[in-house]
Every structure is written in structure tokens, then in C-alpha cells.
Image 1 (cartoon, rainbow, N blue to C red):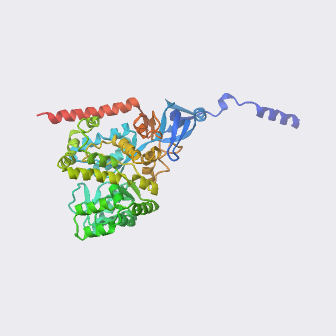
Image 2: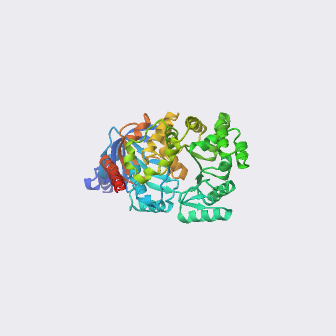
Image 3: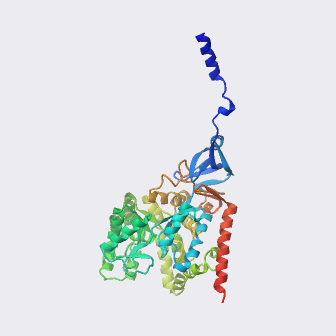
Length: 486
């Protein structure tokens, strides 16, 4: 009897389960099918992939047939023939121009999304507290825009050129400034050198690092780049500072400037003429070993250097920039127009010398972060649009498309220590992605060929992106009309 019962039980175990007892597919909010995934970390393509998202998180990635069988979603996106990359990051942007320009600055936020930029690093302007408020409103879903990571008000000296700063004239002032920034819960610290004493610059960098904050900024002429690195600076903003680190006589030139033996123009001329590749490579390898990143901002540098050759008056991007913001462009335009032929030639040469070091930085292992300097003051440096130009310049200067793409997808998260959450299309990562109609590993200009953006798990298809651009253009047209009324 026991033998018969055992046999019946064994036979029953082999029978298929009723349909209702089979494992049901898991539920997702969004399912992207048949995409070619761009593995930015390894510079390779992975074909026929599916990606499932729930909320703002990627919950599954894998072969399309496997994922499609295991998941059901409220919305499906057919991505055959398209390329899926992580969301782009612009690691150097500005908002500013004064309180009268708040609305025009706010209108820039959708431009980043329309250009596939899902995160920006605000490097401070004169609206720091407004930007910090926007950061919270975006995080809470009350304001539409890219994830904002902000320095809040920058640290400066007494009565600086730049507005919206924390003025410091002593170590105690610096300590109070760092304490205030900690209270504001800033994402990093920005330090500039309009009137800040060189010794206080170094003290501010050390205090920021001691408080657990990354420090970035403009290194005073009276200091070597190495001194700023020794103090603990985390990123070099603008490639001209990296060029300075490659000057054989940098220490002597900075000491002469600090002592008043030469003026700023003389120091700049000597620095520009004194570049030495062996010195540079040693400095850059040290930067790489210490984890110091470089944000080149080539796009704005080239635009300003060649204002004599390029007429921007008909740029289509001007239609997205408010009239008062456009007015802030005038100072650079007017200054460039007054330049002598010799000054123009020097401007060109300085840009070319600076840009030429980009492949040396890459070769030395320095992490390049894509950033544009876009925002107020910086003429024809259009928020959102400029990042694509920045990446194209990197490739023109010797980086591979894969390296350029990594500078705008992985470098930013790496600098902030967030690669566990961003920088790849992978399970557990933030659901920030861009769907392209062309292969960016073959041609970096493909980053402009945007079919859709997934922002914190929400699909922004091409129609929605076009609507965002149209809405901003309509706002600017209304402001333009109001500005011309008597």
C-alpha cells in the first residue's frame, strides 16, 4: 500500500501545474524592448536588450526575450534600431543675472531635458538660494527639470566681482562659510578668486574637505595648481588651469606675481609660453593618482576665442534664451569687438594651446568631466545644446567617441561618488536614460539624435520633447514682445 501511494505521489509531481499556479510576470511601469544598449564603461554595444523600470529605478535588464517573458508593463516602448545610453550630465552650469531674471533662468530647465541631460551640476551664480529651492522642488516633483546638484553660494573674498557669494576675509569667516554651506546641505563647495586671499583659498579647500565636502573652484594666480591639489581640491574647472600645471616655471611665475614683480598680463603671457610636455605629464599623472578631475569647458572657450570669425546673431538657439539673459552676453561681445588684431590672434592661440592638452590629460589617466559653463554672461553658450558641442570638441581634439560619452555619463557620478546609482543602464540604477536613433560610439554627434528621454522613470517621447522646446520658445517670444513695447 505504501509503495502504491509513493508511486502515485511521484507521478503527480510530474504533472504540469495548473495555469493559475504558474509564476505570473512581474509588474513594471515601463518596458523598453529590442534596444541596443550602449555599455559606456566598456565602450561596447549590447544588442536586442530589454529594460524594465519601476518608479525611478531600473528593475531588470537583459536579453529581450527573457525580460519580456518575465515582465509586464503599463507602457511599452519599441526601441528596435535605437541606442540606449545613460542620462547625460552637464557638470558645469550657471544660473544668474539677478532677481529680475529668475523666470528666464527657470525657463532653461526644460532645455536640459530636451537635450538628454538628466543631471546638472550648478557651479553657482548670483541666484544660489533660488537654485537650492529648485533643487528641492525638482526632487519632490513640484518642478520639472533635471536633477540639480548645487554648490549653493560660492566662497569669495571681501567685495568680490561675483555676486551671491559668502565673503571671507579671515579663517574665522571661512569656517563660518563652510558651516553655513553644511547647513544648506550643498552638494559641493565652489571657491573663486576675485578678491579671496590665496592663503584663504587653500584654507577654504582644506576646511571643505575636512567637512566632508568636495571642493572646486578658480585657482588664484598667486598659487600653483599643485598647491591647490595638495590642499585637497577635487576638480579643476576650465582647462587653462590644467595647462598652467604643465608650465615648467609655474612656481617662479606665481611667486613673481604674488610678490608684485609682474602683473597679471605678464604672468599670463609667461604661463602661456612656458608649457612643457614632460612637466605636464608628470603633473597630470599626479592629478590622476590623487583623483582630481578636470572639467575643460572647451565649448565656451572656443566660442569666445573666435567671436571675430563666427556670427551668432542667427543662432536658432537664441529663440530659447530670454531677452534679459541675452543682454548679459553683451559684455563679452563688446570686449571682443574692441580687440586689436594682435589680441585676436593671441586669443586664438591661447585657446588652441589649451585645447591641445586634452589628449594628454586622457593619456595620463585624468578623468575628464563634460561641462559647458552655460548660463548667464557666457555668450552663445546655450544651456542644454552646448553639451553636444562640448563632446564633439573632445573628439575633434583626440578623444574617442566612447571616452567623450563617458565624460558626460560616468565622470559626473564618479566625482560625486554616485556610480552605484548612476552612469549605466543596469539593474538597480536610476531610471535616467536617453534613446538615440544613431550610434554614439561610431559618431559622437549621435547624442543629438534623441528619440526619447526617460527622466526618473518617466518617458518623455519625441513629441513631449518637442513640446518642451515649443513651450520655452513661446515664453521667450512673449518676453521679447513685452520688451519691445513702449
